[in-house]
Length: 222
Length: 417
Image 1 (cartoon, chains in turn red, yellow):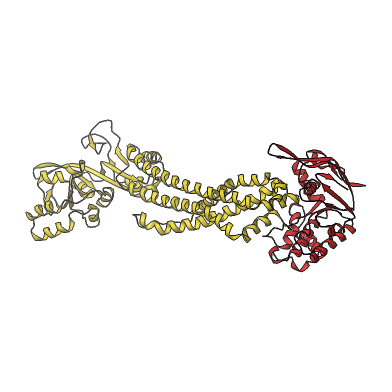
Image 2: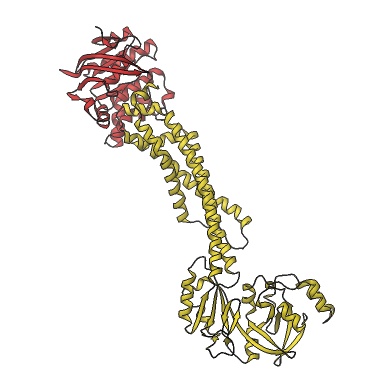
């Protein structure tokens, strides 16, 4: 059963007087529990695809259904609630908040949810244990290595227990050994039942995915 | 984890930026508190000084006749058949509701009595009160006094004249006795009186202690003696012609006091010298407007600093805002985070600004005050005002940056990464 369904999705940008098509009439189904890798050269439209996946960028045409919800028919604030409940983002440059501790960074998605602080800490501690950083919760991001920061970003994406993880070049800033550790972690999460959509340049990373699509000139080419 | 934890941690871990924001507002609040505190104390000081500068209420017996003019006020003359004021009325005046606003109560009895073959206009006064009321009275110049005294009692009086002349008559208030006289310049000249002269009025001997410089008022033509002595020699024991009152009108409506005096003394007429009152109040109002104007300008500049720094901060935090939005924060959550920071900055600047402002006011007050015994006092109302104003300005200056941050497109924000 499709968890995510792209229906003739296009995205155009205005560049001066010219209209540039970033995505053209994309039809794509992602089933619950899939691990989808999206590959393509720079400027092919894969990041635009990921933004539309995440409810961050309105498509110019077409419709995106997630769990049978047409998410771009939701208002901006409802779409924020959708992101909070359905999506966990893992960014290429980690994007941790520098003035919050690791524990606080992981708890960040819970700041807008109901629930006592103790309960939030328990959840955050569980995911930190899951990513192997249980002992470093009190540190600031600047006190961690790149690989550790990426794992914190994954922990933050997991803390809300979202069904979908969107990862944008998750190993882009890591050495190959650390990159493989992160990919193994994502694979474990997929095995546990989470749907993962990952944008990557790296064929080695793509090999961890169950399904691969290539984007070229705004179209799926596979 | 709550939104306020994000605001608090941002301020706590970005101390430099937080300090810059606080300082921007702090300067404005400190200046405002300093100026307002100084103004208040100076207002009180100035009010006190001005209230002591002559009477602002005159009480006379009720009369339908024009009898005598004294300083622009109608005074019931001695020849008229009106019920005179009495010494006991002074206690009634001091018993009115706004008695704490009474600064000086100076009773007077006017009598025309023979002296050296001429009728003179003698004013019986309470010297202590009268000299406080007429602080502009000065003793006659050394040359004039020396010239006068050389004809009278030789070296002793010459020394006395040198000591007294040119000084404020107020300095004599503790040394004047019941048989002493003060003479207006014109009266002394007409009667050819010299300082130290002993004169006989209706069998009572009086010593001329000092001659006053010309004032250009009716005082120049008068001889001033102790009230009880004048009552005695004029045979009008306990009687008063008028009572001059100096009231602290800066803290109470003068019309209320006039009403209270009228009620306390039926059969009399209490009149406010409105021109004097208005002039005093206008001066105080001008001063207040000036300090509020300066405070307003400084606070405006402080608010601009907060505004520009907050705008800069929003631009710097584009990435963070993008992350917040991507993980599901609503626009209102972004606004809350930024406005909560603004609130905390305003609170800190308000409290610190009050403390510093009071400190500066305390340090600088001696350079502005002329009266001893006035000081800066802790004032809860001012703390609330300083803090409230600071928070309001900080929130007002941060509202646009907060709304701008909330409107930020998350994909654009993340692209800036």
